[in-house]
Image (tube, rainbow, N blue to C red):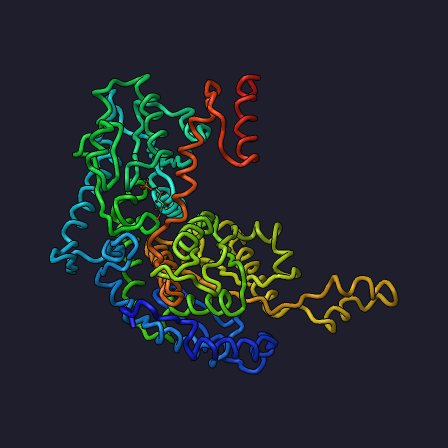
Length: 554
Ligand code: G6Q
């Protein structure tokens, strides 16, 4: 099936059966399913190394899952998993292998790509990262005045920012306190300027993180950082204060960074899958090599589980299929990610890129137009804050919004009863979304009212319920469990891409805007007399920009 270029999943019998099954079961209420099966939690949950997935609060039955597993079989998911595992060139539009899982293999393993074992190279980079981070962390690496480094600023965007930023924040309890790690991604000068405020060039190290080393946002920030540094240090001092993470040696050299301080990775690591590579250097600097390796081990454990477990006991496969059930068969437009952990507050943004850049596609792997719904809009916010913001719509709005709730069972900061309150809130939300509140229950609550007053209030107090959610409960946010969690989502996205027939590893959709920005940039110049040849809106906005520059507006 894998090699069949014209395979249409939506033309299969199981596809039609799933549509039929959706029509036949869409009126089922989850509260009734729970009442009918007191063991529903046991039947629809799964634990692996301190990570529990409870998927019982979904609009599914055993039959739904059986059909979804059949769908996965028809799509030859096992065959594709095998290809991922061995690094086949499944990124067809870029003719690249996909091998981010190799980044978390233990040193004792082997994995050959084009006849060459990639594991020793990966381990060599990890060892160099380790030596470097130990030098920085113990103060042996000195800035140009002989002082140790106190601040590290990672300059990178997209995949060269979101992963390391999330992991560094999530693992803050493991960080060394005398080293501050900052992230600057936006080309908006505010981001760099505000970050550099109060930093001392003599004790600051910049990591220029760019796989391609051609990304304008990152290179502009890198140049601005160099200017800032050269106000205090000299060109000869740059080697002690600028290092690079990239696959582009020539461009790194051209920027003036000594190749000895470049940490490399490979074209078979996609940007949004790169936190496990040298892109994780700021994380290693913050938490140390031992914890970074534990992070890789957690991901490796999830990889092993994914590659080996049968579909019915396979966390990424289950999450993916349940997602497809809603996205494609219920036509739910969005999927919310709700981490009940302040350290994981950037998780929605991270998964937004992982999922939407991978599966936000309307053509299949071989260019064919898909006539069904694919990747959802991913959004979310940390709990409990989100409860006081948008949960109203989840409980009483008109949309179907499947949610993932992510919550650690133990906190690194056990202040009084706060963690119990957080957990209670999280569980209460999933319960309320599932069961809703019936008319009889509301009537009971409003027993003191009658007549018009009761009629007026009743509809406002009803909760339809039947809103699906998964709960991912971690024993604690540790490097290991975090590695498992992120690898879980990577594989979920992979499985969905396979079933929809998408290439999840390219991102052509982000190119067009970049192209047009290059054309517009010279036209913004107030000295430019050239007539703008865009639509009247874009022309008008360009003209307004020019006028505002003349008027000296800030
Ligand atoms: C991720 C994308 C994208 C990329 C950034 C930064 O999968 O490809 O987000 O990570 O555009 O690219 P560089 O690392 O090459 O600067």
